[in-house]
Length: 96
Image 1: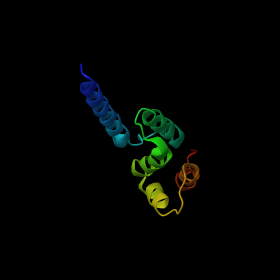
Image 2: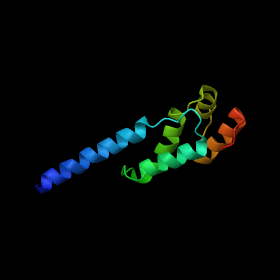
Image 3: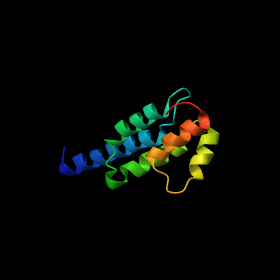
């Protein structure tokens, strides 16, 4: 295997890992803490760099299984991961 083959294989693997991360939605009975933990595990191998926390937050909003919570999250200015847990608790009544 040449250096170019190895480099190309690494790019393909990163693309596949990012695909899996971006397709990961919250499961029906999955609490938000578990969902965030799973997103963090997936993000570790995606080479997101400084964007990691922001992309986890984005995935949390997009992959939300509750439309009312998603709407509230989308309407929140300066949303952080901490805010998502509080909003989820307040809107759904289920703990983070």
